[in-house]
Image: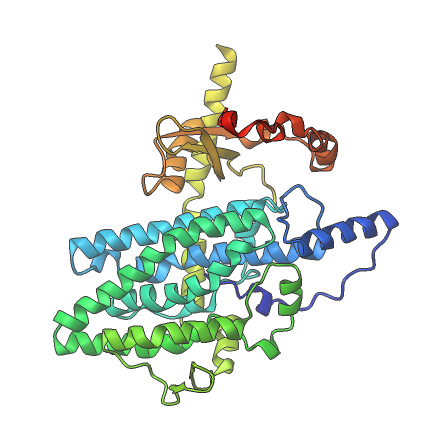
Length: 334
Length: 96
């Protein structure tokens, strides 16, 4: 999920002037490879800005997976049945795994895992805006699976063709696993809508009402306000524009909502015969920027939990390292 | 920020089923070899993707330099006679 990095980064000044003829030749060769649809590997020459942009996007993507464990992890002990608990545990474990694949991909660009975590913990690095919303009821867990993971899949499938091969490989693995996440969420909501009490059905509708607009924001600002998109497209990091993905998500979701028996909280949502797409209402971008800027409902809580987990785990990390050093010394002596 | 206390990096290779090669599938951090195997199982084989894993310290892998790619691998390009399709045989024996 969660590739808002390109939209939330500040401009860091223009491309520095190339210094030497040799560098210009390398740049030319790189551009040709991108144009030919070639993949770039970790040890290949790449422009500094390409490296920096990717590092930011992949690490923030990784942070999103890890922080994304929190809203749902909140419900593991309170899942209504053993079946739902086992499913939720598996899903949250997957998110942790996805974070690890992505950290490993980001490390190939030359930044250590600890540096990336430090950026997250100090608030310098961002993660997806969506995880700063609270999970108030059990229906939120199913809704996250259906809508949040659904939006994530829409967003992530094109990254499987990213020009940076380690990222593309990680994304292929993630997308293979993500489909279960969306289906289990929908299945859980369906159980409530078809067999639940009136109160449970109302709970599902309430969850959908709260998550719908934040999910549309996950795709990032409109194309005409997304200044870094063009460069991302040029480099083959971004393949499909924010608005195109958002429209695709809305088109796919409307029918799913009908089958589920819930309404989507948008009075302007209607089928457009001319465009063959669903038109939808105006997104409140001031909310998006507020949440990205740290003023969402749960920003402080999420970050505080990550920092606490890191600090409270420090003695474990140190003890494991001390143990392995001791074993290595013993082996040497023997 | 120092990386001195970071657990070392390991490359993970997974054999999907008996009879096949171990294939590189990613990397992870672990304090020692035993922990690396355990974590490789959790991170890379949550859905029966493997029946065996290898882990190797990343700093122990020696790789060819991408800059040497042409020198190392291009010379084979014009040796088409190394492939069976180079030889045109009569139809009656072409199954050979």
